[in-house]
Length: 368
Image 1 (cartoon, rainbow, N blue to C red):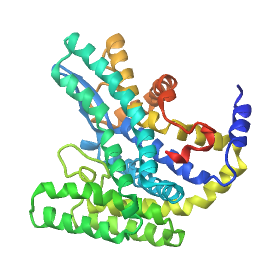
Image 2 (image 1 turned 30 degrees about the vertical axis):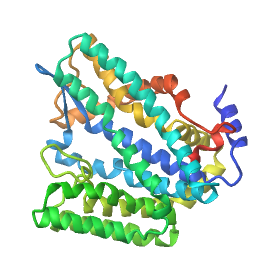
Image 3 (image 1 turned 45 degrees about the vertical axis):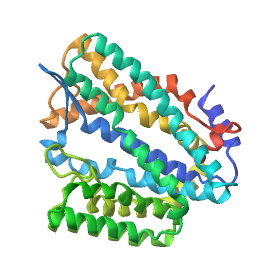
């Protein structure tokens, strides 16, 4: 099937009132997460096995990349908007929630089943504990997002009545106590729900009149927090330093406000573009139909490439070496097409397990 034929089929199967821009925002968020992980994760081959290192630990000039590729707030913004639309049309809360969870859990079950087999095979082959720990951490780490997303989805009826200012205030108070007053570190985990509840509730409301205030206020607040309150400039975790994500800090949340404002500003232009360009819309629709597959398997794609090349060619720059010089970044950029090809192969194998509505698959990705 040619690309033009596929684009026409997807265009014909798309409901008239579909919010294509929301799909585009989700696709951008997915791309940010995938590229971000691929660019900041180095699988370093050493005498004790495979370990993980990050260029952010030694290359400060790489920090601005995290401002582009840390797109989690956009995920939750879109998730809140989709949940609001679906819940408003649902016959009952239990049926709606169970349907949402089925769409999340089926691909996860497949991932865990496959990796259970792989882990057993690695154990039987005598793989060291360091390598096993590294591999399983990379495979399982994306699942925290799904747990939080599932929790917020369950709270949708309450979140519809909640003003975003309340979870934002909660994050500020928690950070003040744990970081400013040397309170217990476990308090930070309150922010795991409260921090991502902010963009989720913004998605439920999705009022474009607030786009510019969110963008300007979020940028200004983040700059102030980084410049004068001691928050890290990196919007992802850096080894050996305070993490803005683990758990979310006030800086991560204000940065997310700016992202939400930008997403609201882009919503209308993206919608017009996708209605004018069926080929672009086809690409966006296909990404959305395989969103969970891409999200769950992108780390496996990276590890597969690293394992295969290490066995056949030995340690290679940008793939198995320490990310301690700008040349590592240049080498990793050259590896991105290879990683993308590996992810495409995994997509071909596993996207069929991703739940989708039974009627028009390309026209119903919002129901995820």
